[in-house]
Length: 304
Image 1 (cartoon, rainbow, N blue to C red):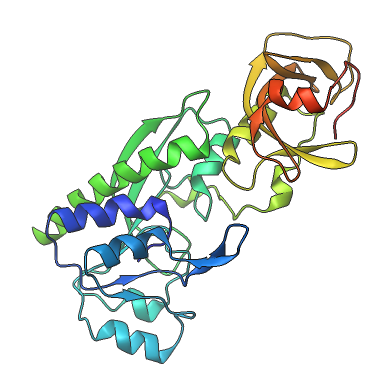
Image 2 (image 1 turned 60 degrees about the vertical axis):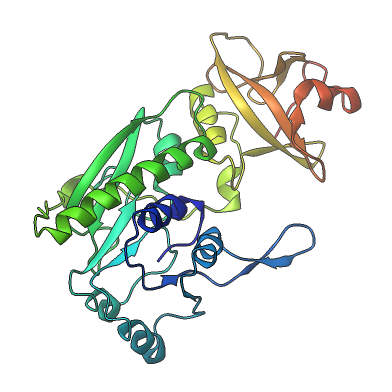
């Protein structure tokens, strides 16, 4: 059970190893792009290429879907970013339970956006936890985990593929242990738990009174979605590729300090932030130098 690119490496590794994948459950096709044409989830595309049956229920909390799923008599249900909360009846269906590939080092960052939240909070390390699912929100016993560093230029976009690969490797390891009866569940310390709730577009709004470091984390965490943004002359301007500068000055937060070939330097509540790429409303993402050809930004212009 999985939907986005994050779930693809795990399924591919199962296919490559000739595991008996009885079916793939994924979200329904969604409109995509300017034409709003229906597009299949990445997991569906891979499953169809491999000749695996694909289920795309609009709702999973129905007796009909439970009966359909039960007809496969699965030993295991493997879950990676499926996007729906499984019912107790589904969790109890497979003989060996349901295993989840979670994008954090549990009990940190339980919830829908663990990868983005780790960057938002300025973490220097994250990872994957394979967990035995229960009825709670990522509260089940931990089975395997692996760690990855977060670089100061990492974005969610650059981190997700690396975590997905690690998740696929750990998933095979958990599968081997399950087959051998050697799974060793470890209880989570619930007192150490933190949450990573779903993101909204409003989470991208930049508050220039914050520290440059915190704004840099925000820009990197929300790339590729929902994007960090400010406003310029009443129109939205998305920012990318931030660098925290070891500079200070008297300018108010949000004021343009300078803009040129190196990028756009903006004063923050503490420090200054260099942004190397921007995207104006209705335009493509581009280097700041290209943007300035059509929209000069003299020092003193205030963003936000």
